[in-house]
Image (cartoon, rainbow, N blue to C red):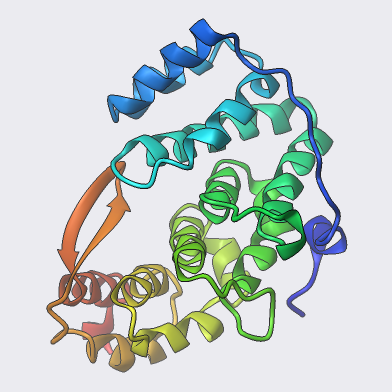
Length: 250
């Protein structure tokens, strides 16, 4: 059953959330730290700030299309939402629903960075992962809440890779591989690459042949891995996932 958990029950709930923000000086300092592209100084700065004060500012930083700034903001968002969840889980759920609402056509927006941010929050907090992982998966499933706009769908695929790496048990429990396997022949290079990365954590060896079929795909993609933007070939990513699945031992 795909639809389970708190997230599913409130999928279409408008999460209109007004959060107290930074003053201009605070926002400028955070912006400068994000632009440096290093996560640790950002987390050090945020550690002493109440989570609800900074969430809105981080979400606005998702709208930077290039470079590391948006990715560091997404990573920091997960840290902040986890802190919020530890204090008040319902407040964290409201934030997650706000992101979900931004991906809804009725919101009037686009939801830049929302799938990635949801995934990062799940990577940091197991309760959120259990409640919202199926919702994230539904964004790449044509019979679910499929994201028609390719950049958003790529974001959801990156999110599933992040979930797979950080919460491998939950990723396997929701059987995400059954949907992600369809992306192994996707025409979009980045979508294929992200699916390959995620499926390396699936533990499903019957995928070995399909993943191996991409060892000849030398197209280069740019993906955010290990807190860096890396340019790497689909073939190399396929080799990494084949090794992770221990396909040679079959």
